[in-house]
Amino acid sequence: MLSSLGLATSLVGIAIAAVAIWQLAFSAGAQQKQNSTAELQDQLRQLLEQCDALRSAHGHLLEDKAFFQFLRADQDRERQLLALDLHDMALPNLTSALFHLEGLSRRGQLNDETLPQAIDMIRESLFQTRRVMNCLSPSLVHDEGVIGSLERLSEQLEQSIRTVTFRHDVDFDRLTPLSECAIVHLVREAFDVIRRHRHAQHVTLDLQQNDDHLLLRIIDDGTCDLMHDEEVAGRQRIDDCVELLHGHCELQCQEDIGTTLRVELSVTDLTQSDTLSEKSPAIG
Image (cartoon, rainbow, N blue to C red; front, side, top):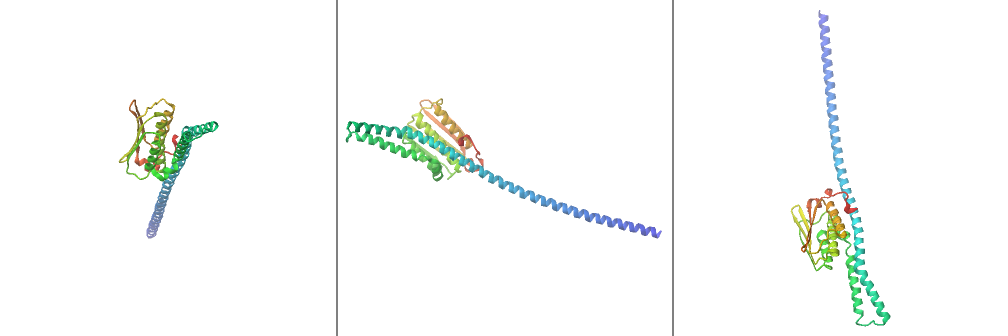
C-alpha cells in the first residue's frame, strides 16, 4: 500500500515537473515569438520609411525630368519664333536697304537725300534683331521669375502693339521652375498669335491671386478667327501648357469687341512639384 502510494506520489511529482517544464518551454517559445514579431514589425517599419524616401526621391527625379524636357521643347519653339521674326522683320528691311543702296550706287545717286532712307531701314532691322535675341526666355525666367518675365514679354509686345497693359496682384514670390517656364511659355504663345494674326491695337495681361486661386487673363481688341490654322495651333500649344499645370482654360471671342483668354490655376499645384505631370504634349 505504501509502495503504491509512494509510486503514485512519484508519478504525480513527475507529472508536476513535466507540466512545469512544458510551461517554461511554452513561455520561452511565446517570448521568442513575441520578440520575433516585434523584430519583424520594426523591420517592416524601416522598410516602409525607406519606401517613402525612395518614393519622394523618385518624385523629385520625375519633376527634374519634366522640367528639362520642357526646357528643351521650349527652346525648340523659341528657335522657331526667332526664325519667323528674323524672316518677317529683319530680313525684309535689310534686303530692301541692300537693293536700295546698290541701285543708288549704280546710278551714282548716293547723296544726303537718299542715304537716310536706307540707314533708317538698317537701323530698324538692327533694333528688331536685338529684340528677337532678347526673346530667349528659358534661361531668363530662372533669374527673373514669373512677374519679371511677363513684364519683359509685355514690353516686347509693345513694340508691335499700340498699348500693352500688365496688371498683377499675387502673394507668391517664386513658383517651381517648371511652373514658371510653362506660364511664361503660355503667355508668349498667346502674345505671338495676337501679334501675328489678330491685328490688335490694345492688349491687357492680368494676373490676380485670390488665396489658392490664380487667374490669368489676356484681353485684346483684335479679330479672332478660330478656324485659322495659326489660331488652332496656338490654342493647342496653350492648352498643352494648361494641362501640364492642371489648370482650366477658356477662350471667348466676341465680334467687334475682342478676345479674352482666361486661365485658372491652383497656386498649390504651382508651388508643389509632386502635383505636376511627368510629361505632357507641351514638352513633346
